[in-house]
Length: 297
Image: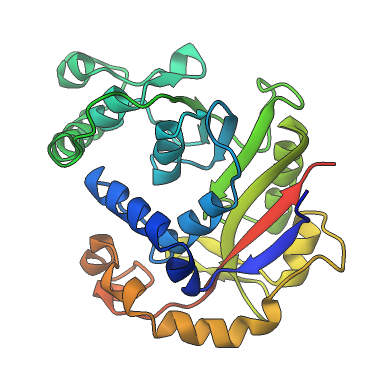
């Protein structure tokens, strides 16, 4: 068993796993999805840590409609996609291509006929129109043919109270830059404890978050915490000698700042808002992404 670890994610990972990172970027683009400036680093790091995907039950914690769940479903995983937001109205090309279901009846996504039905009251008109537009774009761009072998079950739930999921029933937990969007650090710790509860003995979690070298701080534009090494060890109940490369924070930060690969693939969303963290697309990262591997004993 590979030990627990904390790893600042360097742009070097895009060269180390070149074929994988290109596959991930291409599939995300064709699905018509977007993401944060460092998500290609997070995706590549997390997926490169997974030894086996097909047939596994995997929780995507704080999934939204983000990319990783669709990639893992395509590889044959059974995904429990958990988020506190309402996702009954999601782009119809995702529902059709990836066997999307509801974890409970109230979580069931709207079908295409339901999306276009003006009398449907399960979701607002704006969210349904948005899902239709994104679905059309995705349908045009993403032409994979056969449906994904795996499935995605949407579950609207607070990650700290997953009572419906039995103890020790999940093979793997992944979370891509999601848990930091909580009011305080104790909330994040409670979520980790609950995710450990549902994880099988010997299973692991792969969590990415923003990292800070000197002190924990709250990044207002993204409404997210940036965590020090000491805080991550506290949150994840890691021992003091857990392997970490936080001593390389400054040098990796320079690599990120100088990365044309990351700069050139900045999502369009940054260019249309003055409150995105990089106003109107000005390349100016404020933190590093960090990955945490935590095994359940």
